[in-house]
Length: 366
Image (tube, rainbow, N blue to C red; front, side):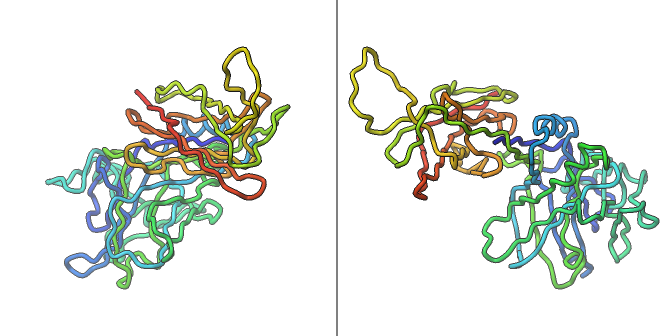
């Protein structure tokens, strides 16, 4: 199995109450419904684009395999959040310029995308009528027309519902169909618009703020387009599969440091924790065993202890060949100059789950 993270080439928040403001260099992306000082209803939406060249690179790796793609935004701050709401992500139907603005700039920067315009102030307005077939837009009923243009098909629409039992406000929106359409030139990649449902936007009953880290953040939480696909293979050869938790596993080819653009295949040597006594002429760690087919890897940030790639039956399943177990990590999906720890989880034949949390540590460098 494989996981590949792509980081955005541009992102911005557009605000109905600052209709010509550009925020292309802001560290925060905001998806909010607010009440302004004059008691009018205000809205902010996020525009974010990932490079098509990177998407095509991954899709060529995926080949004919089944894949999923998710849009991941990481929460920075939230206020007055209701117990039940839904975020939507649609592929944009027109291009837009990044700009260099920030929300707090005085005077306001207007050299890029805003609520009214796709580029600098006064140039290329977002359409407000006569939309191309298959697209739509919406605008502020108080009169600030604009707000983006996107494909309306439910086939491309990604959603995520947040319910009372959900603790995290991070997004994990399934955008598989939009990514597939970009790769196959069915629609053009102009990025996503991420917004609240129409029933929440400009509603006097729904006022709350969601602020996410942008690609300009100085944290380890930039947005990502994460693609999972199945490249696993499981053939044990002459190796026997461990059947109890009394085993040890060693990643025996961890070089400790990896370039950010590198790809590393990690090898796992497995043996019984208490192997039978045998006379040998030399010391060895012989991988006489292998992990069960229901085995997965995960990556934790060593400093923050945040899980940056979680266990996934789609993306982090561990493979096996006649030599032993192995898995591949694409290092470009990890922040450079940080240390990471690999965790390994296996589900044994009797249903017992074993997690190996040892010093499988490495650093990604520039």
